[in-house]
Length: 587
Image (cartoon, rainbow, N blue to C red; front, side, top):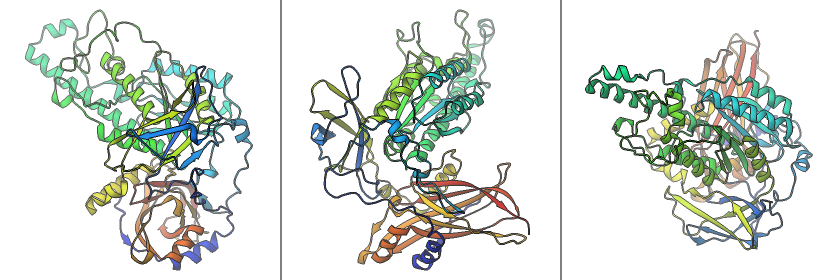
């Protein structure tokens, strides 16, 4: 893809009247500001503030959800220091999925207008995503989890519960968008071809029998083993990279949806560890801490609760009785034992080392996001039912951390309930990352490169990113040998960040990018602009009512295209994307 970043300054008033007139038929209104009186309703999250939202599920000794609490029943601490709860909502503590299913949809968009606003795609009830992980799961475990999910859809799917199905293999793909129809969901599951991923197959790893090993010198055996451990580590590296990118893609896709979201991740290996790697060979050691921190922060800010499900079911044998020796235990065994030979995929996914780290990662990820880890049961049905129940019965607490340093470190959260016999489930903390401060410390070249890479990744996401929401109008295309396609944006100011400079001027910095993709997946044309907007108080008030406008043009020959559109808030790194079909007619 060609480099796209060029400098351009937006003249807001000149473009405002033109675009707003075109979109005046739309009845979509901007999000309203929250009430200033605490405790308030949950506001749209403004990226310029350090408001921390915590979704809390409360249940009694029998596991029943408790739905009659108020703000005074909660005590919330950040790193041990009690915080003032300035936002409290029990809107999701008593309303059923069936009741939510009968809420009125928004009015239709005018012709030629498209949006990534969640209310136009919002699933009723808690959005639930089922992630079928073929990248990290052996084929036999994929088949058993497929059967378990089918049984749930046939017998237990609640009225009004919408589920989307994503499949992870060499990349993340959308198999079925949100729907309540079990027939569509079952058909989508049947579309997933169960197979061992290339990264898990270990085709480049050389296995030796005992007889073959005996015929080789110790030095040669060590060379082969060293190569095998390095290749196995590279395989794990690739799986970690793809897996974390998929989780970030999901977080971007549902970030704009209000409230709690549920992600059910069905896998037999959760390949990354929150601890530094170790081992005999230095080139086989890995530490994914920074990538994991970034991913966990995205999931937490998007209010995604992760329910990790080990689809291997009950693991028997001596796997828990062994004591892992990180100095000598290899990633894979070069010499095959006669009594218990394993394939490379089984070793990478089901070895003692992988199993212990997987279960620890499952627990950590679930705790950090307010979900649950389920293993030794292959209970996908229970995970789906529990996530739906939790998403249907929860409280939202919000606070501005007192004296908190936004140092990028993990800040623990503790919630106590002033009620006997009840427990709570919530995310265990957050990474105190101020994206605007982090961006300010980078060089222009670093910021440019990061923005480009993030936009490129987001444009390939199977779900539209909703961190930054906007509308797009594509006017009728004037017939010509190579027509100019006009893309007119209105960006929701409630979804982007502003800093206030002298004399009340509001400043924002955005990247706009468009790419036309042919039916065979090739990028035919692309363009992008960086917009550095300085708005007076009056202009800012107008933008809050109508959106921030910008127009781009892309010359395209007559053909069928998929038009991919992205907006990035360069102060926070948050992104919005949209994909729409485009037909350019021949003159």
